[in-house]
Image (cartoon, rainbow over all chains, first blue to last red; front, side):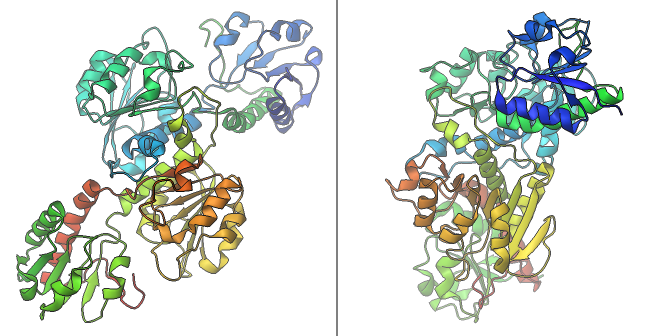
Length: 307
Length: 307
């Protein structure tokens, strides 16, 4: 392995900048200015505007590592002069933890007890043996199923492709969703958001779930039709909902979901910046090391497809 | 197996009384009045006062089955004229689920977000790889460790006996507690309450924990010195506390813990009556069957140790 010159930019988020500089060093890279760099680690997901300026003089640039999984903000900068990688898959373990935390919170009524200021009646269900349906067969599901395994739940994964998902009791294609909804205790949404999956949980799907069922969304707010969810909760036809993502997002003050007793909302924090850096740093170090060695890079972005 | 005469008393909690009568029948016992009974199934955890009266005329009584795992209310009635069994281990799977739910709620700030009525800043830690210290090497710990296993945590079990606890990364005796507290991210209390363990988490133990550490108590309120906990939370020297049990219990209205932002209180519901009877009924049936057959009984109480 030869050490190669890698830049980290911008430096607008100090904690992230420092973590990425450490990652470059840990991966065997040599930290340089962008103008001298073969590789560039982008260190501020919000600071996309300065990107053209940063790369303007980077004549030798071959590779750009983007932070986070969703690269939408960079979409108009994608250019196949360079090899792009991102953070997809990096955060799945953290999101899976949040999903299990939300599942258990629902079963144990933790959202309700958190709001109580007085000793109250016992409420709660045993998760062990429950029937869990997970929409999506990607990285989050791959990390959630092992966390669920010790509970001996009956797990159905619903995915686009006809291919068994490892660790699931059964895998079905999206077209058969309504077969499993009536025997679902917890419905977990862990999909990528595409035109096909937007609004995949609406009035019909919510009505098909048993009245005690919980909805857990750790994917994107657009998967769930918010008005339909509000109505299902209001009319007692759903056990509850735990949402790390909402539509609209941020959820505006005064929205009915804020005052819904059976709704737990977390503000898109399945991975927080602190968690994120802890996971991203070793991942970027690995990609730097691979870049220096000329190995295949992790999490490549397909410039043509845009993800 | 011969059928033997078994009494169920008192009848003050109808659902429990009926479940225990069914358990006696299912186990092959013959339901009789206490005066004629060889065995007695106690059917109201709260109704201890009537115990002396119920057993006063039970000349043939050999065995008493107590409900629930904690037998403190019966401590002053324990008497080695009789063989005592309790519900220890029965509720452990449900309590372990609640313990993990509370651990995750603390790490993901679910208690705080449950109270929010507005989109707020990201808070939260990754549980994977955390250092967990569990006080107690009983049934709850035995069920909690497998649930924690997929998180790859570093788990220390602290117990009275010098004997490795299966699934723990290390087991230490209680005398060495202060060695592990400073490197504990989550301290779980899962002990039986005895004279020795009352107040085991007090000012010194709380001070020895890192400032970000969480305390999770799913055992008995008396294990934690409440005033010391209130002070630790108030002074920012503890990350938070999730308590399924409190001292006093029920926690009175207006108690400072109700308004503590980093405290999640559930009203002793790690097993709810619904969960509890579902688990206790087959367990008592099994013990009735063992009693009739002269087999070793499950969950014996050591009258000398008091648990």
